[in-house]
Image 1 (cartoon, rainbow, N blue to C red):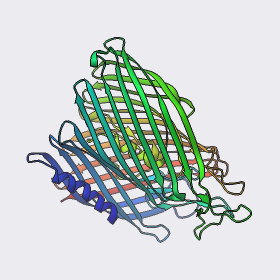
Image 2: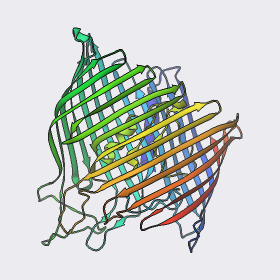
Image 3: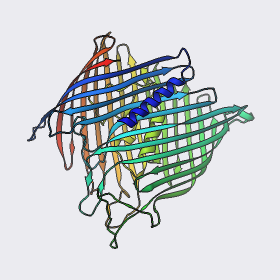
Length: 539
């Protein structure tokens, strides 16, 4: 708790130092007490009910000024189990997004997240996080860096650098692959560096009927587990040719080199892994590094950009990358001033850490804070405040220390109308893991595929000046093709109903009930019901 609490305070104090006089700022620290009861409704034999007493501390902060905008929501929960059959539970949950712009050319952006995420697809994960944290990981992530954008007459120059750090820690539950095989756990750190620079003109610039951009960049990921490393370098030229006031054709061509490696595995003379005392694989630095992925060559794509109004934008591109066909797209439409729909199609070689830090780095500086007093690992979408754009953090579908190619699409709808607010996020993600073959006697993620479908829905209504009612529905389907893991599909779903009431300016009460279920393949079905009452005091 201490490290991330210090990190949260650093985010907040840095933001406050940069505040000019007259900035609109709200900082609300609080403490909270909770009473929770959770019961197994599936009728299985054994203890089926457990009670927890919870304490929490957190802060909600919003900052809005001419140069600094942002939001920080963070809380720490500790639950004391009333039975020695169940463990006490610690949960860190938070999201932060800040942007500081001292002038029109330069900006500094920072984002962070703390959450509990699903571990391996090999085993089930409880839909509600009280006591049962099996197959979950505590995740912390940060992305920060400067952006520069300046016009020299018709020519525009922009450059970006982003540093990312991710930690997957405090995991509960592991996948035992049997005698002689490693125990799969997902405790690791990832450090990411991304930098790019571009120069070009808009259509009409320099007297040309088309726009052009010349760009280049580099990405690097380092994962401490087995010293895994990924590098990507690219250079390309893009052109945009308007064909009408709302439609333009796009094309780009360039060169890209991608390479992923890791340390060799310590083995005996027969090729069997020599495991450490925790039954984890060990690196052998005396041997040559193993190649996980290596691809370089020509990349190209063509596309269309359609912008019929300031409220609607559609961009679709398709071409060759990674030696295969790649299709990406982005659609946004502002339905009303307080409702937006967004569709994103992506295809990228990445890591868990970089996919997560890139995701939080693209979130808005004002978002709808999580109002789920009953925590769940199934909620991965963030809705923008007042129906604005948000994003879905698809990296959280599964935590893994290997590199992978991630392809998918998500749809995000958010809005507010009168006393009602709503949000819906639906996503599909497919991962193809990039890992070396470790030999006939050692399991490897080489060639393993995972796919998932997730649904995150919420609807709320303000009942009075001091009370609200919110219903949240969650569902997820997971599947992998590795028979040594599960080789089958797993489904989880649930719902949470929450009532909030303000008793005074500082005293708030919450009552919430939730039900979740999950199962599939060799994983037993379960039905878990949870009820919670809480009292919060705002300092």
